[in-house]
Length: 128
Image (cartoon, rainbow, N blue to C red; front, side, top):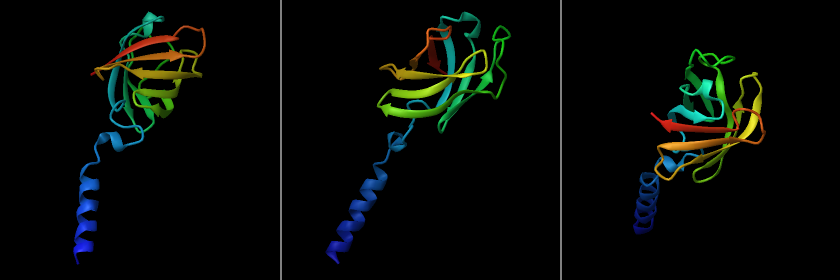
């Protein structure tokens, strides 16, 4: 009986200790993000709502040609390690570019960099 009680206690402790970080993508990226800076300034101000492994546009500035609300701005997001993600980022031509996200230490800002030299290679986002 003591053995079963011990196993039950261990199971409850492990289940209760699972925080948002247990999620493979986890809370580091989940939520709304607003683009505040970048090398293609007409796109600043757009807002992405991220959940699962996709980020959909919820706000699109009038200066952001080629983007519409509900477009998948980020897709195929995978966690590389804590605070670092790889993804495909939608460009203004409608294509997707391999990119990387780095969550900054405070968790309220992130940097996105694309692997190409095109506009949009550098993007700064803040958590809303």
